[in-house]
Image (cartoon, rainbow, N blue to C red; front, side):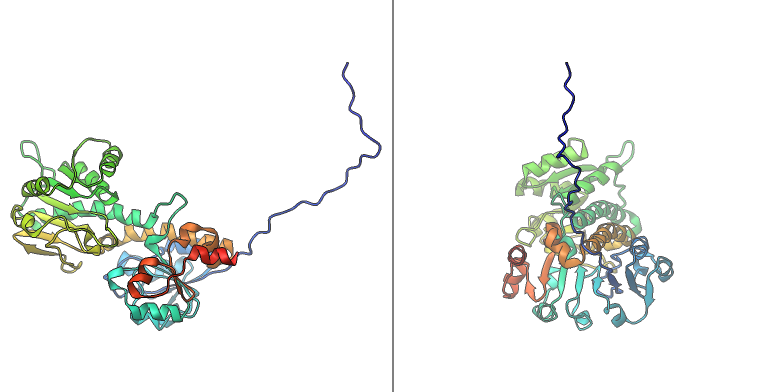
Length: 403
């Protein structure tokens, strides 16, 4: 026998209070994009497509005249996306958030406003004590592109630029092997009956992986050196094929360099400096007309003969070996690089607005906090503080103390 449910006469349907999460009030952003005049920088940190998204969400974007022309984004593209084009750089720096694709320069420091937010790369070898002092005095919130992490702990902008550098290094090597640029006239991939060129890659990170993919795709023979067995195994798994790999044994490396047509330097820095693993003697034993692409040059380079070159004069010869040592390789394909940077920066700006401002997002998002090297008068990057003798403030502890 099924019992009927019993309802007490005292039972009543009384409404209960519901606890709702209080949402942050969205903040309207005022974003400024200046034209870069240093570091041979052709990239722009926000494409017209990214500007359009932000403007349609109620944010204001001001772009300096010709800021995007290095990436073939013109003033008309930005104005149609809703940005305001200005001809005075000082007008751009009235914005509360500044986006730069090159590091902050001393010439721009005086234009910065107190408590401004600046997203830009940092170039450790070019940093100056005077520049940092002025950032401190103006209480700037400075965020380094390359140190921003995503939810998985990866560095999305660094990875994108590394992928570009890997691809571009092989295409550049193919160019300088050809007669067009006074090379010795070797086709990288070879043809039927003619063996392919030999490509030697030093390093097994993201740059090396994409260099290897491109070299294999063109039909070259590839050999990879690194001191990490784990990275070598991971690289082979990622590219999906077996290839010659070796630890960085100087004897084996020297012998293989003698036969290499192309040598790519893609080692990761140790304590901010790339270890030199190829001596001048090793370079002198390489074949005449062979090509060195030192992708690691921005942190010193891994070839003893390397010295910084520019996009205008990208190569020099030593021991009849062509050296390409341009530090800002991604700027050579600036439109692709700009889109990659914009794809990362635009969502971060949206999150800043949704969170109620940059301060609130820094508090809640550890990956963004990792990129902050200057915060309202405090140096929050330990290597920078140690190098220039400033007091270091741990930003995690700083926010913990305020919460």
